[in-house]
Length: 142
Length: 134
Image (cartoon, rainbow over all chains, first blue to last red; front, side):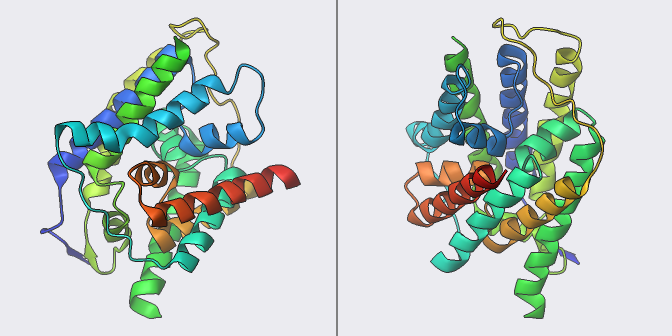
């Protein structure tokens, strides 16, 4: 292992993380809900009365975030090196996996770990390990 | 009012994802690539987020109601089972393949990235497939 110092952005990443933490704090304290993106979106696919408004509003907030950033600065250009087939396969796996696993990076990785949930710790270790193994295979083994 | 609060939370969450670098699949893959040139930035994202959210959840746990009046709904499920681990492993494979997880994919879709739209459409299909089967 070697550290990629040129791409390491400790301060902006820490600051972005703090914003994510504040957002999760707002949602639980004001709305009484977990800021887990896969769960929030998944709940819209089988709508229940009184359960759709806040979910749509949260997703709308995510969608307009780039526009909000553009008002005050510029958007970093994302590096998406996967082809469309890979993206489709990956999206399907993420949709299925987060549904079976009841959460993703936000629900388990941020909220669950903040609640000191053993379930979320297990889930986070599992998806981190699988993600690392996948990148290892794609970049160094295949 | 609760929708407005949820919108503000989503917006702040999305801005945090962009500022932190999480919305860039290249950076996510750099974090997952522990055997190559490892970019530890995303560990800082989790540290920053948890440092704040920890106190919010500790406080929330002692309340029966949220500040806007709704019920405090915290997950009550316990136990680590095959579904949780299997699902998380499958999610991790998808995450490693594309460098996208659900939040950043939606944010990137919101910025008009066509590739993110393909990912989001497939992700919704996966979620819908689960709900048809379950």
